[in-house]
Length: 482
Image (cartoon, rainbow, N blue to C red):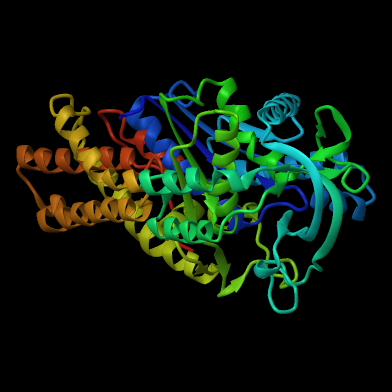
């Protein structure tokens, strides 16, 4: 069934520190897809048919400890980091409709209502938890999930906690069959397909009931459990509900909306096994797709403070510009495995694809048009044909292969460059012939400006403005060589 609206989300980031470029990659990918759907559905960007959500995850022990280390109250700390995260994301021209914070008043209210309803179902009960906890993941762990040294494989520098405490539990074990059927019967629920098999294999081992609260005496920074002020809502139960908070209040959590979550591979289990079970428990609508991506590594190494290789998005934007950074990471595609990037490679791609590629082609055609002194009004007769070509170029957006969409666009640009070189308009003396050649080339640039908009929106707007009038003039260099 074709759905008339689209709701796109990213994972929300812990406010223990400012986000780095690896975390920002997910926002760039989701933004590109959101811009495509706005074009497809005729949305102006104000959330009529497409709603795009990102934000910050501000409760729990990780954030509280980060605040304490800075001698700040938790709220003062998360206010500061959330504002800095927003600044980093804004520098990349991310077109979110809402930047949600889990400390927002409306989210607090929705989480409370959500858990109240869950308590009424009987699938949430109070008991004692005895086991392991990783503060890095903010996650309860079984012994089988730890290495031989009883360490979390994702957080080797952090000591695993051994807990014995009263918690509220969610009957996760009850939902094994439901989750298995969901994954098997909904081939688009988990993408790429390899992650489906991974989650099905995890389900084969069964699910343990999971704590969804922590004692207030240990974790005071959070949302109180309704009816029990001595317990605080578990940070993941709180965080996952952010999607519902924004979606339900803006009319984007229903059967008419395609709901797409973009998440990293480290949190796939929460989004594909816990979140749908939480929703099923209270009989709320389920998301359509969880798209899982790998990690961005820098020079072959994991990005981390301990390695001293953290790069913030704003640093790259100041050096290369937002569109160049966006292009570079989107060219890598929706990475299913980890991928390594480097500043040297970014510079190479900038010069080859943007300065010598798109930028040079636009400059050549604008110069030829200006010298010719002809008028080139935008085409109005072949709009249906051009729209068909656009959707043919955009076809791989359907499975989120943004890299292949870019590849197709750059193939079109290469064909255009070849057309210029073969026809040599600077040598054509016949005015009618010259006008025909330039008119075709200018129209192709106008089309390309539409095609690149989801990827490099700032540059797309510059090209569209430059080629909007009948009298085309040269303009500033789009991508000066580095």
